[in-house]
Image (cartoon, rainbow, N blue to C red; front, side, top):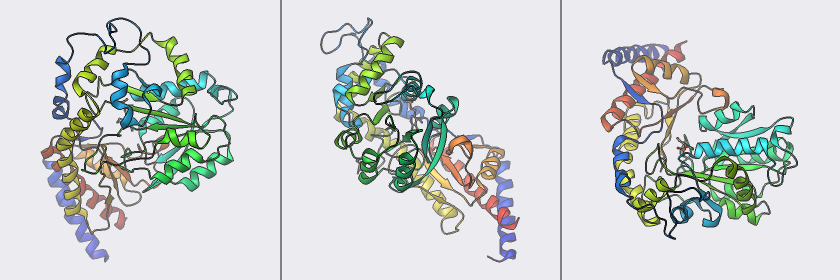
Length: 417
Ligand code: PLP
């Protein structure tokens, strides 16, 4: 494009931006929260329990049952690819379980470990980027060094991962969101999962933090299937390598769902040795509510289809508007995920922070630029996470149209700077 054309484009974008600011919008695309209408679909839970007795006759009002209700674990065993006997149902937050897994590994000796992580000179975690900011926040809180690993369409770049884990015994873990990843929607290929399970690690106590938060959150009629990480780890002689996490936060109620932890028998024993000191048992009545409401694995599948009917139009709208406004301009690329909660928007290098700032000034709140990278630092300053589930459809449309205007303006200004 000639300089004159660029100037004309920038001036047009400026006018559009001024018109956008004048609208006085107040829109929020920051966090991946279920919308009130999604939550309404789970309201059957509120009246689902009139008698607090489990299938095997246990009085659920009392203490006990640390491993969680067997009938609820049975509903989620297939989705999370963990045998019922190795799957625990806990409180309402899987993030809490991931946090606790790190703290337990810092303060107690993991199966296969030579010492507590707190006694190591340094601990490093691999962080596929873009990734989930709250994973990175846990590492930062506990002084765990983070090393970014690029994502590919098949998951983390396994050549890089294999090299890093083989070279350094201080590399103790990797964060993985294997299905409909937060934020780029990536589904790990079978080969990626196999390589993660099979790779040789210098650390004997290396752990994969397998955060399968979006295991059943499909947006198409062809649910993505991923390889069974626990089975593959066992097959390759690394039975204790994977910690599997999941929850019903984005299935039933985000604030009072049920979280799950699954792993090898040795890891489960280790886990319970810690959690049994921390609690006498989870909220089993909430777990029973989930059993009554979902019924079985088919009930879970049907509920997810109902949720997808609410979410899909929003994802479609984002794609349609970005295509209409930015398609073919070379100013942006974006993901069109087949599930999960997020879309990743890539803008020209050096523009993401400015896009987020200018969007904010126009009343459109976006996740801070850099949040998808360790230490909040996206070296290319390109990646923006869009979270379209919470606002209603008209708000999503208005917000994305506004974002496209901002991208055109910032990119033109950058090109002329
Ligand atoms: N893991 C990922 C990848 C997420 O995106 C989220 C929420 O956005 C969570 C975990 C939070 O899960 P929970 O509500 O079970 O703590």
